[in-house]
Image 1: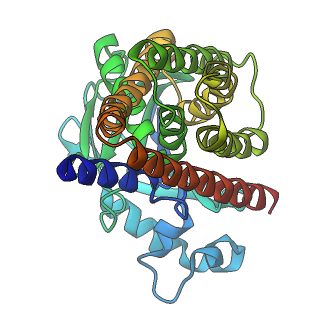
Image 2: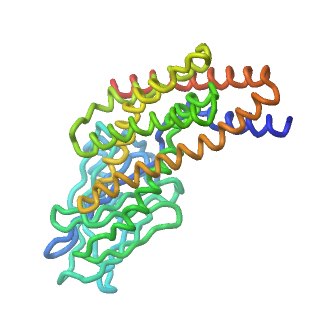
Length: 359
């Protein structure tokens, strides 16, 4: 019994010990590559925090000041071009910084480069490891032919290169695999979504009950994920993100005070699932979905989200059920503690997001 209790406490403790963490803090940059007649126009959007790392005596906020940015633009350009190389038909292309501008609302910089070539290549090799000091960093690379998005890649960890064939569309299978992974990844880097699902599980219940609750959440966020992705409804993040945090508080309060004889989780899961769908959509929209496989990428991302949620359910629900069977009194104390952690985390995120979005 002690062994199972330790497993349960470590599992819940590890998942709940995040009230003072940002719910989506994975460092990310975006790289857009447009093939032209005489070269590639490359636009990099990334955080001032990452760019300031290699500049002595420069704080991230200072790079948003035009004078400081102008003084450091050559150093920034040299650093990026040493870590971003484009090879066409085996020949390395020379890169040139054309423009650099601050994006104060996001605390980012946008850098525009041009890589010239004499004739349009049939095959291009991209080597990209922009911020090696942070192994968590992910770079989303989008390859365009004119205005049409042809291929997407994600560089992270040891994965730092890819080949691009101009005019050859990315295969559907690769799109599905990429966005399936992104859906799973988004669940596990988003403790707010994890805590919401755990909050729903704390009241326990039969397998049938839990399946109904999870299915209601799935159906709801699938609806709003699709609506937002296709641009039908796009509520502002200033409304969506604090509401997601409130939903976590709500399920925590429900687990703490509601009588299990009247299970309210089905409508709760559906109503707040609609809100979480908009949260998933904001992450998906940042990836610039390939238009030729829009439906597939949406389907795959949603499937990845479900796989991530299923992992949480299969991990937490059996441990809670076993604890209830072996020691009901101890189970109640563990559930009450878990519910309080959920409420605390949700409340902290609510105020954090309201303050951040109003700043």
